[in-house]
Length: 204
Image 1 (cartoon, rainbow, N blue to C red):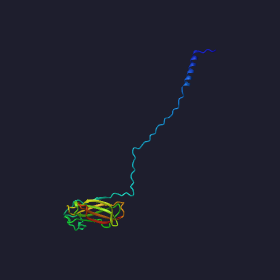
Image 2 (tube, rainbow, N blue to C red):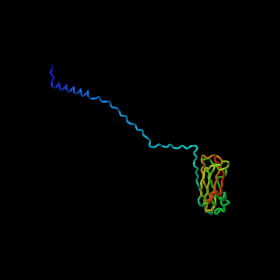
Image 3 (cartoon, rainbow, N blue to C red):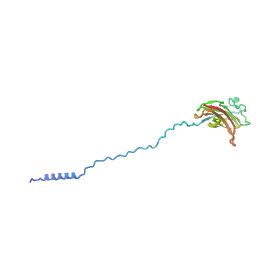
Image 4 (tube, rainbow, N blue to C red):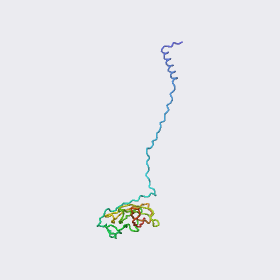
C-alpha cells in the first residue's frame, strides 16, 4: 500500500473542500431589467386659436362727432345765409324750436363700408342736444338702425341756433337700398319728439 505524504494529504483535503463548496453555492439568477416608467408631459395651458370672423358678423357702427364748439353770436358760420336755416336770425333766441339738415343731399349714394357726413342746424333744444341716426328703409318706413349718436350742437348761447356735423361709417353688412338719415331732439319732460328732420339716401 503506497504511503501518502502529509503535504499530499493536505492538498487532497483542500481540493475536496473546494469541490464541496462549489456544489453547495446556488447558481446566480440572471438579472432582470426593471422597466422604467415613462411620464408623458401634460401641457399646462392650451392656446386658443384666433377667431375667424363669420360672414354673419356685423361690424359695430362708428361715428365721429364734430359739433363745432361755441360760435360767435355776431358772425354766423360760413354758408349760413345759403343754408337750410337761412330764415332763422343767427345770434338771436329762436321763437320756436327749429331743426334742419343741410347734408347729405337727397339721393346721395353711399357704398357699404363707406362714410356719410350729416350736417345741420338746430335751435331751442334742451341743453342743445340732438340725436342723429341712419336707418334702413322697408316699404318707406325705418327698419333697423345702421348708425346712431347723440351730440351737442355748437350755439353761441342757450336758445340760439347752432351748427352740428357728424360722420358715420355705414356697416359693410348693411343691405343695399333706400336709407334714411334722421335728426331729432326730444322733450326733457316726457321724451316725446319736439323736432325732427330727415333725408333719404341710397346705400349701395
